[in-house]
Length: 125
Image (cartoon, rainbow, N blue to C red; front, side):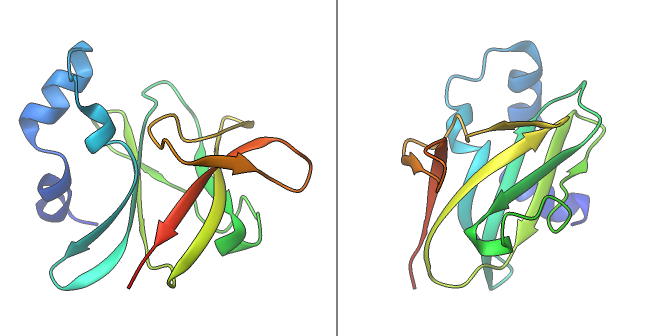
């Protein structure tokens, strides 16, 4: 995803506020969000982890395979991925440097098959 598309989701002002820790609505920008950019509907994943070495998203939509959906780190410390995912409800988590964690910006949660907490992604038509 080029910078011109990234700026439609995260503006320079958003990045400034996130960097200084004063973005009071960062839940609107970080985490997972279904968005339409240039007529293409997809899920935008964004994780602020400036010191991380690797970030991926795993879930029902990619068979819980951490190799399938690696996020790319920007110079701003935000890891991003834009992915087309069919309509449905999906459980997912992030893997940040080997540690599994739910999406802290997503209020919808459930559990996976082992009973661990995961986030819920709902994609409607």
